[in-house]
Length: 252
Length: 215
Image (cartoon, rainbow over all chains, first blue to last red; front, top):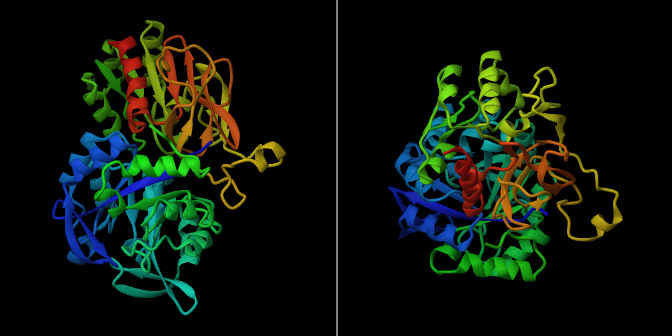
């Protein structure tokens, strides 16, 4: 049976891993390659490098960081942040990324999804969506969660899938960094609307939050950052908990 | 020397990096004649089967000469599918035809099977999502040099929408909506649908098995 994936996110700024709350208030959490190596040893299924300041400061994702991580681990590696066009995706993939996450650029130039899917295959194109509850629906925010739009997250996820996205990385801005649990309602709404895998993100605080997002939230994968950063063995312990709860996971 | 064939589908970085990690000398041949001195050939691949059309008659005969010399070859993902007659993904483009069978899109053949529907399921929200992305288990179906040392039920990383049928060449099978060939072998020609270069220690063991035959 296909396992539910546990994905570690490395929010990277200036070559170091940082962690914020509600997309703000950053503090240092370590060296990307060292953390990725530790997660690999603990049994993480996938790693995402997110250059969190890239869009704001108009910088592309750091090739050096990608290379350093890709040298150490033999796992799927996704890179997001600052992928504004084909040349940025190419740079990330040449540095060692298997997938690129596009967010702001996908929304403003949806044709980019198709262009990248044709060139690298759909499996290499992840459309990242940052959503916030507003007026009884899930509204999309762009530019690292700083700018609201009129777009609906579920509708956009469907369009992204139609245009060739291979996966959706769905982050709840409301839950991000709170450790209060994933937004299962948001995740289920998107997951049941698209034919491609959905990665839930934002709010992981306890192991049971993962159980919830894989059952109620119908997520295919779950992404977290700080729950893994500050405690050794967290990935292995989480997977043991998930298996005990009847969730299929890869145990190494 | 391992020849890593570049036919323009996706990137070779991951496979090259994994071979380097295993201390295997690798090169990307620029002309078919370069293959005549190769100890082993790797045909990687992500994306569409149609990309294999770039491997024209000259490349095909160089690869066939390599196989006739009893030298090993490993096809990965689309590179494995290419070993078969062809794929429904690109009907006009024949494969290498080393192994009989045609690759088909993954379909939910078990949707109406009550025993499957009642237990834990690959279906999210009642549907099978395609592409098949993530870690799934290998059922070893035959003794195999490629899967030597790989335990039953080992997890490997997949990302694909099309798959090869389970035939006599199958040495490892995986189930996702239907059962398909995850690893195949005929003599020293091997293929894996999953990505050993992305499958952590299990994947590195499989690459090591290939290198042992080649170098």
